[in-house]
Image 1 (tube, rainbow, N blue to C red):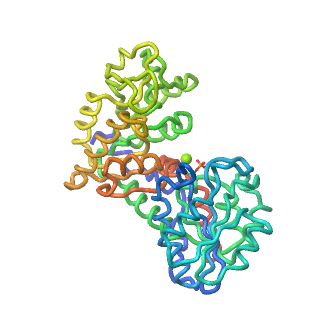
Image 2: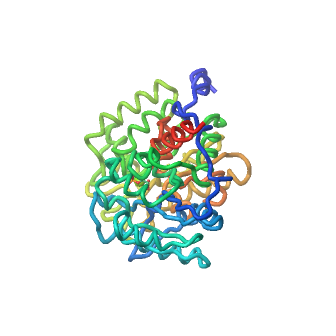
Image 3: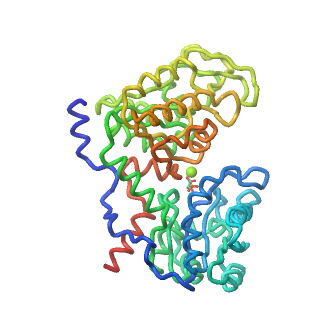
Amino acid sequence: MNERAAARKETNPTKGGLDLSCVRSIDGVNLRGKRVLVRVDFNVPIENGVVADTTRLTRVLPTIAKLAREGAKVVVLSHLGRPKGQPTPDTSLRPVATKMQELMPGTAVRFAAAPSGADAKRVVDALKPGEVAVLENVRYHKGEEKNDRDFAESLAALGDLYVNDAFSSSHRAHASLEAITDLLPSYAGLLMMAEITALGEALEQPERPVMAITGGAKVSTKIEVMTNLVSRMDQLVVGGGMANTFLLAKGFRLGASLVERDFVATAKDVMAKAERSGCDIVLPIDVVVARELKPGADWQVCAVSEVPAGGMILDFGPESVAKLKRWLSQVKTVLWNGPLGAFETRPFGEGTFALAREVSRLTRSGKLISVAGGGDTVRALNEAGAAEDFSYVSTAGGAFLEWLGGAKLPGVAALARSGSRTR
Ligand code: 3PG
Ligand code: MG
């Protein structure tokens, strides 16, 4: 490890000034007959009206089952998608409630067609101890994203206690995550405790060298975090659409590839900062290119310097994957968020899947600590058959990255504040 890396190691990027010891767990709390509002993250992919990936449901199930078993009337709050204060057909939580009922056959799971108001109250009032109600998307109310006190009060009226088990939503200062903690005794659910414990351990003192793999299309939402990451990581792999903007910044011509021209200057800044802090930015050297993004489209592999006009970069090429494997053999810890390519469309998942299998192989043989997060990432790891071998798989995407970047997550901070008030 170089000197700069050693100096960095002493900084603690993860707590963001939070005293996590103030966060109270639900263990040992008397829940019998209490209406417990539990904020979860059911922001899951829905395809043809059916939940397409149940990971976030199964991960929060132990909390909901524990609350029900201990005699609480469980009122589940979540958002899904970004409906901006209005119901939309593809953002209803109804399919999620249906899936929850399938996953909890012995427990009555009701659904309320609104997150607050008369419809929600009727369903909650009818709950018996041990039953569960899933309320409709909290983002159908404009007050949610505004962290509005009145909306938080209308939610709080439905419960006696509040539990946040949505680590993956806790980077949002929204009413059901933050404002509500001023109104009800507030606790962390089992998944929240597991996330902050596991990520805290992996990130405070990672075994070095430590590599972050970032990917996905959302360049604009990740570049700030990348700025943070380069000062903490030894390597930063940039994949997905984000890589294109970096390649553009390096002067490559990328045909019809997705790029964010407005972020070329930011990409240059990130690269300069990486250079100063001794972090290697790893970009693809060859890519898989096609003229259209559809299953079975004609594709070719070319060097990043030879992307044809009209061609779109859709995945890392085999040389790039081989290069990543060589890097991986040198590192001790990997933090992964975001696929390398358009993995949902065959054959553009091969780069992501090959890398996932290599990380899982190295983890299985005890050579690597691997922590991954993000809905898409988890889905890709599952498709590659690799998720089970990872050291820890977080349910969080954006929250995972912000935590990794050292940000104080409003939802977690609110739990710590609520806990410290009662000390
Ligand atoms: C997620 O899925 O990353 C979280 O639920 C947050 O969703 P958001 O980015 O729409 O706030
Ligand atoms: Mg998200």
